[in-house]
Image: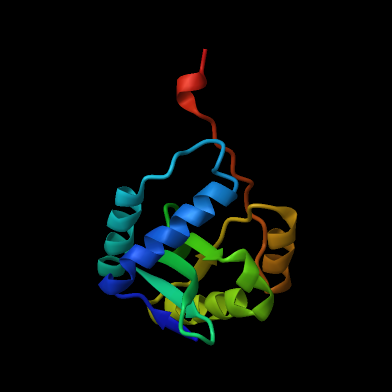
Length: 149
């Protein structure tokens, strides 16, 4: 089941965010900051975005998708952009992640967004986006600046 997050869900959102960070592409570059994750979750929920949660059959929150809606930098048209999308690895085969994607698209559209953007941590996820009509616009890179000579 997909539902919108509430303030009571913030501890679980932070927990899932920590899991995502330690197992994802940012792990080698950034350290976990649970307090910041909690602040971000509240800002998204009370600002111009939404956090959707996926509950398994036992009612446990096992995935999330958070996004913000903002005027696009170049056109001013409302654009939704993923902030975080994560499913526990053991829950990925059940289709919950896709349900989060589809609900996020519907909700973003209802919020007035004309476009929706996601990041892809690998080629497998990129192919999933393409399957659902997304087109690659850019490839993202990041560098730790205190390592600059």
